[in-house]
Image (cartoon, rainbow, N blue to C red; front, side):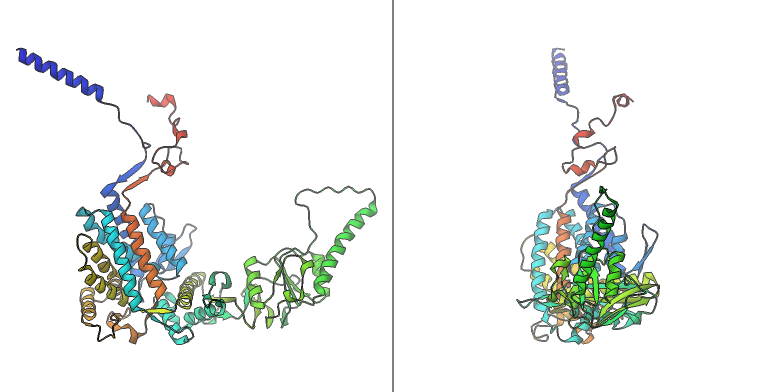
Length: 585
């Protein structure tokens, strides 16, 4: 009995001690915040990245499918450009948003390879899943990936060979292999010619021997609906959607014009807000008006003293100034965009002047051969063409509909990006998945030299690269397993003696699904595009693998994001979120 009593007392003491030690759970996160941690977060990221890459997998290669997307405003986007597709898709998962960002970065950096980079990143992440399930730490996987990336870049450097940028035929082959996968490939070499002409036109030789190619500022694409695709052309000069100020009285055609560019208004300055003028005599009002007129007349006579044929200003031009300029036989254009003015300056050799008083003879541009205003469709367009040495150009695109024009513009932008890359870094690589297969084989051989767990993720990067030739074979309806096995065998057979110390250049013909030597087929890719896509894919996969916690959620007020504080703790001003009377409900 005593023993039972002692046991009961001990149990009571332990229960009361436990009760005292127990505390209510501490709520650090906002209650409506969603949080994923550890393995769950990593596997969800991999699934999201794979889903994004599967969306655009069918758009790779010359036999690619098109995607039709209805955008928010009800318009239709019809394209197979990876970046254009992902830009229109609305995703909620943060890892998927990060993948879409990759495509945009690739497009801005090199202009092509936007589909490849997403497919590659998705495949690398997909192959990381077994390692995570085997409890290999993400840091070990990332370290192996970075070693594999260094090895891949070294192999690509060995594969590449220089190209003469003055050899037009070789440059056309590179651009054609880029355009071959696009909608405009059916129009033959037209787009490749346009892209190459535009890039060579705006290329400038720097004193240190490098070339600067700024296609964003100085190669303007003008889309005009109507006409046929064959009417597209690159102008040796600039074109803009403007008409002369006084159409009936000013000339619409001037040969060998003297061009003056201004950045100031040719009208009397008005007060910024309300201006009060007090006059005592009625004659003062007339004097005031006369002074304004005299000022405008003085400015116009200063301009006329330089004998320009065309005056272009970014600001306004009053009716009185138009009258004086017309009297002097000068053609005037007003409210021209700054970007257009910069292009005219570069094409004609003029200098943009900010005050009429500072005008000098050397500021007048005489580089243009012809100034003309023409009506295309329903609108008037101004041309400064036949320039002696234009370092700026306009590309006119004509097409049946707005959708066709938008797709042609996207294709042309990619082609110009490739041409610019080759001019910057004149090195070539074989296309058609040959580089990926050669790198894959070399990485598999290199992996045997690595000891420990890192060997498996290192080898996985090589396996992931095979996704490019595999997708090319899939998209043209070939037997994927048989074709890839043949290609692997071909690369394994080719010894250093056969290829002169270089890797095998056999890849997949994207039209027929057969194995062909890319040198004979003439499919080439720019070095910059290939290296950038592999680097971006591996680095982004490494970044996503290192995420082990995802916090997301909005506060009940709707405007403030709880996760936006960066700490996972709800903002301080949310303390009064629930009014006292609601707490008891």
